[in-house]
Structure formats: C-alpha cells, structure tokens
Image (cartoon, rainbow, N blue to C red; front, side, top):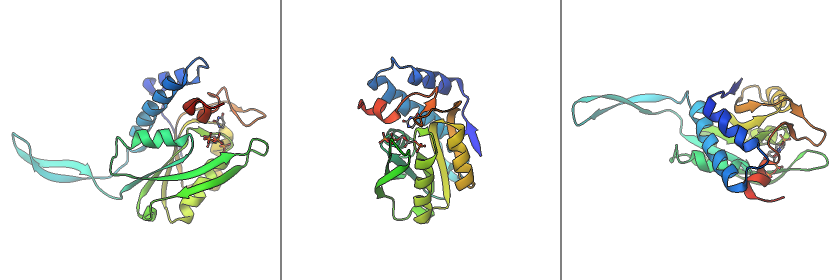
Length: 207
Ligand code: PRP
Ligand code: URA
C-alpha cells in the first residue's frame, strides 16, 4: 500500500526542496522537517495502552505507546537526515544503518555497510530513504532487514517514481510505503522527473 501525504505543509516544503535555487542549509532543514511530517503519518497506527495516572486535577487512564519497540533504519547517505530528524519524535528508538550507493552506469545498488540493532526482529522498522527511484536500493535494503529477522517494515521516502513503487510492490508486497509525492517517471539516467535532483548531493553539498 502506498500512502501519499498530501498535506499542504508537506507539499509546500517539498516544492521548495525541488527548487534548484534552494541551498544546502535550507534543503537540509526542509528534509528534516518533512521527515517529521511523514513520520506523523507513518506512525499513525502505533499501538497505545491506557496508563493510570493523576493529573493535578483528577486520576484517569491516558494512552501511552505500547506494543513493539521501534527501529529507524537509514539508507546511507541521504536517508540519514530523515532518521536523525525522526529520532527527536521517538527518542527510545534504536537506529540502524544500511550503506548503499547506486552505480551510476548500471543503476544497481552497491552495498558497503550494514549495522542493525541486534533485536531488529522484535521491532517495528521504519526504513528511510528520501528517493525511491528504480527501487533497487530500497528493495535490497528491505531484503537485508528481512534476512536479519524483521517482519514489520514501513518504507518512508520523500519522492517516489512509479517504477520504484512497482518494484517494491513486486519484491515486498508486505511493505507499506509512505511518500510526500509520486512523480511522473525516471529519466534515462535513473533520476526522478521532475524530482529534486540528487538528494545526497543536495543534503551534503557534494557534487
Ligand atoms: C540515492 C538515493 C537512494 C537511491 C535511490 O542514493 O538516496 O538511496 O539513490 O535510487 P534507486 O531507487 O534507483 O536505487 P545514492 O546512490 O545517490 O547514494 P547517496 O545517498 O550516498 O548519495
Ligand atoms: N537518487 C536521487 O538522489 N535522485 C533521484 O532522482 C534518483 C535517485
């Protein structure tokens, strides 16, 4: 299932990120802010249980988070900014890292790092990568989470191409996707059109 977060705040921030005139500082800040808004939607179905407590006025039962603990897993590099922003919302979450880069010729993901919480199998996993283009990186990352025992995985991206969504739906039909927008298509170089360019380069000021 794909959830497109069409909230005006999300769309406004995304449009500024798309603008080629937006510099590194603002792009990075917007990526972090957008991630919080996406997380609000992605975490909508977290379980709660009543906690008995006393306010300064009266005793009562009030909801607190329950159920499985959370893990945020970033696909390096660009997914890091999303996970680091989201950890402010869920400070008890463990954070994992999957290092992948896309070979510019073949567009195939190349793995270079993998460090996941040892109890990932017991956690609800939110996998972050701002760009879901061919879907190769996210599909490989999801497979490595499953190989480590994860059974509850949600993919959070800022922008997706229809091609990338189709790959995740084919390879991992159990994984729900939360995105700010689904663009038109990929170009011949595997970039999302109209897109926002190279997310990692724009976040870290490399080019
Ligand atoms: C970008 C992006 C995704 C991937 C998406 O990473 O951050 O991880 O490409 O493309 P795909 O869906 O076609 O696999 P990149 O390879 O540029 O690495 P970086 O984040 O380190 O810049
Ligand atoms: N990776 C990016 O950073 N941008 C794209 O458009 C496609 C892949």
